[in-house]
Structure formats: C-alpha cells, structure tokens
Amino acid sequence: MNGIKMLWDNLDVFAAGLQNTLILFGVSSACSFMLACVIAFLLEGQDNLFRRLVRWALDLMRMLPFLIFLYLLYYGLPNLGISLDVWSAGFIALITYHGAYFAEILRAARTALPAGQAEAAYAHGFVNSNMYWRILLPQMVMRSGPLFGNQLVCLLKDTAFLSIITLMDLTAAASAVQAKYFVPLPPFIFVIALYWSITLLVEALLRRLGRRAQKRGLVHE
Image (tube, rainbow, N blue to C red):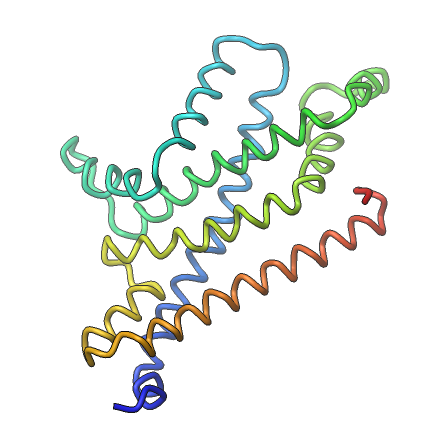
C-alpha cells in the first residue's frame, strides 16, 4: 500500500495521538515547573532534617528510570488498593519525575546567584518568601533557559512511554497503524517528524523568551 495514502487514510488516528501528546506535554511541563519552583523554595535557608529529606527524595527520583516509576504507579499501586487510570498515572509520573529534574536545575541556578542579593533584599525589608518569589526565582529561571529546554525535550520524549500503558499518544497511534497494515516505516517516520516539529517549536519559543529577557536586562551573555 502507498505510504502517503496509508497516512492520509489514518490521519484521524494521528490527529488524536498528536492532541493527546500535546495535552500531556503542555500540562506536565507547566505543572512540573510549578512543582520545581515550590521544591526550590523549600530548599531555601539553613540545612535541617526536612531539607535533607527533600534532597534525598529528589536524588531518589532522579536515579529512578522513568519507565520503572511509571510501572510502579500504574501496575504497583493496585496491589496497595490504589488504582489509577492511564491519564492519572501518566500525569503523576511525568509531573513528579520531571519536577525533580526541574528543581535540581533551579537549585544549581540558585547557587550561581551572588550571595549579596539576599543580604540586600533583607536590608530592604523583604522576608524569605517575598525575596524568593520576587527576586531570586526570576533570575534562577532566566539563567536556566538552555537546561530547561533540554529537560522539556526529555519530557516530550518520555510521553512516548505512556503508550505502554495503553494511552493513545503519537507513539501508540503509529503502533496502531503499523499493526493494521504491517508496514512500520511510514507511520513511525511520520511520528518522528511530528516529535521533531514540536521540539523545534519549543526551542524557538525558548530562544524568543531568552532574547526578551536579555533586552530587559534579566540575563547577560
């Protein structure tokens, strides 16, 4: 069968997969970033038992392969009486896993900020929370642009694992089409092109945000 005709006849399948992938990517990116901001705030201040536990949890999450974490949520939790549907398991896995990586990126950016900024903020009457959210966090985010871009690409690629738990994303759409026609090359090449296009759009958006930040003096080359 002609590859182009095969793709055209199954365009609705790919459209549904693309829509689900974009939903997974968009929601998980935003939520994992917000989670990372909260975690980075919890790590502010002097070292204590609570912050050590937070760092231990981050290290544990970062050393765990994403697929195993997904299996634990979807297949392991029912043994404890907790059942998750594929969307809930997918969102929780992506947000928690990549939130840990985003938090580590922010933590590294925090250590690169001049120590005098905190003292200056205290001198002007800022308390810990206001200082973090209004002064430190914006600089941490702007300094982390390239690393955030890399992590977003990793998040996008990890959405493909959700096809294993039967969530109909782009990868699952390609698998369904190739199983129907027993011709794997055209559907998977088409899906690769779609993933690549999404990645290029994300990178272009981050570059634009970086240029705007430089114009406003938030970051320096």
